[in-house]
Structures are given as structure tokens and as C-alpha cells.
Image (tube, rainbow, N blue to C red; front, side, top):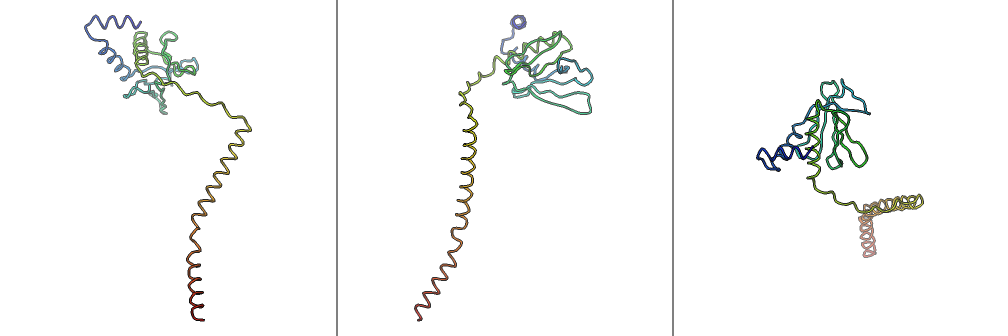
Length: 187
């Protein structure tokens, strides 16, 4: 499917970069599609406008022709592949499973979207490998950590009060010392 589109693009004299740019622009312009929820078409309430954001980081969608407007987005970084489904459907698939499923008016438009979206996914910067996560704490470790954090918080609270009132008695102490010194000098 993608090879056929690339072959046609090369035959008309344009470069691959120019055609890739045109395909991305097609995604940014968007399309009116039907959202498939739980494997069921919802014709009256499922017409949405699907388009790629200007910064090419999200596929945004919003409902059309309803009193209550709903909207959402799927991050391009969360999408691992875009694949066809059903007769005219398209499915965004991520690491955790299906992210969004829509149906187009015709197969040609759906195929163009699949090609353009997969090309966009192939061009994106490779994800940095995640650092290995430390093992989850045991219930006892978790309890002791919470206790330690609570004691630290209380200690900081007491320290701030000590600092606030550290100079509170100084004025009275100084005046008492002066009175005592003046009495001793007189008498």
C-alpha cells in the first residue's frame, strides 16, 4: 500500500520529502470520521473531526453536530502503529492496546491516512530507553518510609518555629539587664 503511493509520487517528479510533507498536511487538515466505541458504530453520536495538531504531537478529535461537544487526543508518542480494521476502519494501537478506532467514508481515504500516519510514526525521534525502575517497596519498607517522612516534616515544622521565636525575649532581657545595672550603679 505505502510502496504503491511512493511509486506514484516518484513518477510525477516530486521528491519523497515533498510528498511526505503533503501527506502530513493531509493529517493536519483532518477528516470527518465515525468513532467506533466498544466495537459498535454509533452513527448519530459518533461523527468526529480527527486531525493532527500543528506541532505533530497529538491526534485531536472533537464531536460534530451534537449539543454536547466532546473532545480528546491521542499522543503520537503513545502510538506504536496505525493499522486497518474492518471494512473502512483505522485503529491507533499503543503499547497498552487500542487507543482509538475510527471508520472513514471510503477505503481510499483510510489507506491514505494509514500511510501518512505510519510515515509520521517512522519519522519521529526514537524514544529514549527508560531507566530501570527500582523494585517496589515492601509493605514494611513503605510504612517505615512514610513514618520517616512524617518525622522529618514535624522536625522541619519545629525548627521553623524555633527560628521564628528565637529573638522574641531579647528585648525584655536587654531592658532587664540595663535596669539591674542602673540599680547596682546607684546603690
